[in-house]
Every structure is written in structure tokens, then in C-alpha cells.
Amino acid sequence: MKTGRFERMTTSNEFLILNFVSIVVLLIVCSFIVIGYAQPGASQVAEPESATDAPVASDLDELLTTVYCHCGCTRETIEVCTCSTAMNIENNFRDRLLAGETVEQIRTDYLDTYGPQYYAVMPVEGINLLAYAMPIIIFVLIGGVVFVVLRRSTRLMERTVSENGSRELGHRVSDETVQQVEAELERYKREG
Image (tube, one colour):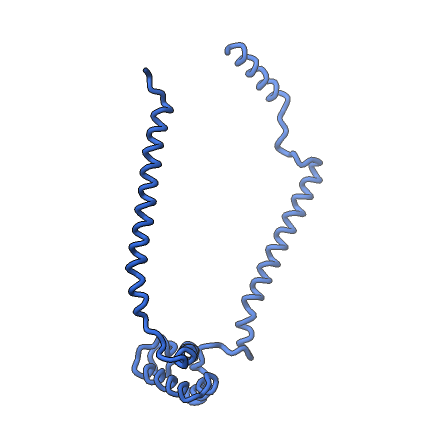
């Protein structure tokens, strides 16, 4: 009895399917193992000691990311700077927030003391308005250029089509070619 080509394919396909299923099951088991090991580590994350620590932490984070350190190192926010001055400023900000001062009061006092160049967020006033508006202006200009180019190319195509009288410019097949194809087809039918 001859074994057909398709019979071997089904056997090999069954083998491939069995291997694929076993690999998927192995990946699922491994993912459960990884999740099981990750959960105990996640519960060890430090949680706020009281309900007042959460708002203070978010306010402190806002202050640390919006003000540059005045230490003289590189121009970095207090959150990123690793010098002792940045740590002292962070402790000062935390103490003032716990004392009841607002983020704006602390930031204004800091900027009044060290200067507006230490403000990490560019205020929306004066020449800074141009910096905020430039992306929009550039986007509008690029859109205008694309519109003009597309409009010109459309007009050029319309003009070319109207000059030639038909949209099927290069799609016409000559009578000679049709006759040659028909002759080849007839010869093929006679031979086969």
C-alpha cells in the first residue's frame, strides 16, 4: 500500500500541533510561577504611614519636579539631583508642607530667593508664548505645503488626462498583440 503525500502531512501536522499545545501550556505554567514569586515582593512596598502622607508626597513630588536645584552642578530638578544641597532642599520642602504651607507658597518663596531661572516649567507669558505656539505654527505650515503640493499634482494630472482625452493611457493593447495571443492559444489547444 502506498502512503500518499497528504497522509504524511497530517501526521506531521498532528505532531506540530501537539508540540505547539505543549509549549503554550509550559508558558502558562511559567507565567503563574513568575506571578506567584512576584506577589510577595509587591506586598513589601512601603505604604504611607498615615492618611496625610499621601497628599504631602504628591505635593512634594510636584515641587521636586518643577524646581531646579541651585547647587551649581548640572541643571537638574531637585528630584534628579543627587547632591547634599538637593537633599536638604527636599527635607525643607517636606517640613514646610507638613507645617501646612501650600505648593505655590513654597515654590514662590524658593524662586524669589534664588531667581526665576530655577523654575523648571516655562511660564506661559512673554517670549515663552512663541515656544508654546511654534509646534502649532509648524504643523499648520507643513499641512499647507502638503495641501498645495497635492493640489498642484491633482491639477497636473487633470490637465494631462484632458489633453490625452482618456484615462486609459498605457493600458491599450494593440491589435497585433491580441492576434498573437489568440494564435498562441489556438496552437496550445491543438497540441494539448
